[in-house]
Length: 175
Picture 1: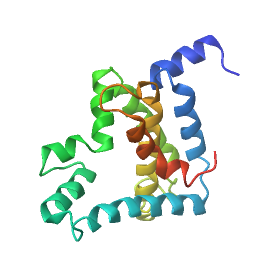
Picture 2 (picture 1 turned 90 degrees about the vertical axis):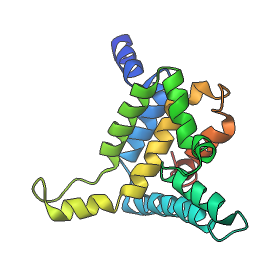
Picture 3 (picture 1 turned 120 degrees about the vertical axis):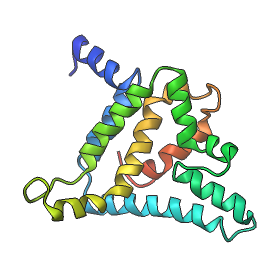
């Protein structure tokens, strides 16, 4: 059970919705190999959906802009600005939560990253880490959404944006 000092510390780190962020971080540190694969597959599917827009009726420019927006780059400022992670970043900045999002993401990434079996800098550990990039991405999105969950409805950070950020996590991991 947490005392008032611990609660104050956790709220300082993760914002007022610290309980949700801590739940995701703790659960992400307990992922099984199968769950990591599910998260990697979910991240891969998200990227494939972006790539498939290139061959859809969306046209090359719309599809390419969507793909670049998903990668955090952009050919079209409007498409980039409307990407859920970019909306979340803008919301975090506007409400003074950027530090909370960054810290929660960093801690979650450490919780998800596999520990290297060998010495620090061991090539096998590095290769294993690359295999978890999708899982780290999904967990990062979920923890970002959790840190900002009390801001749903503020500006462009709608329930739909929150849901899109959480969906790969919540649809693949039993909490």
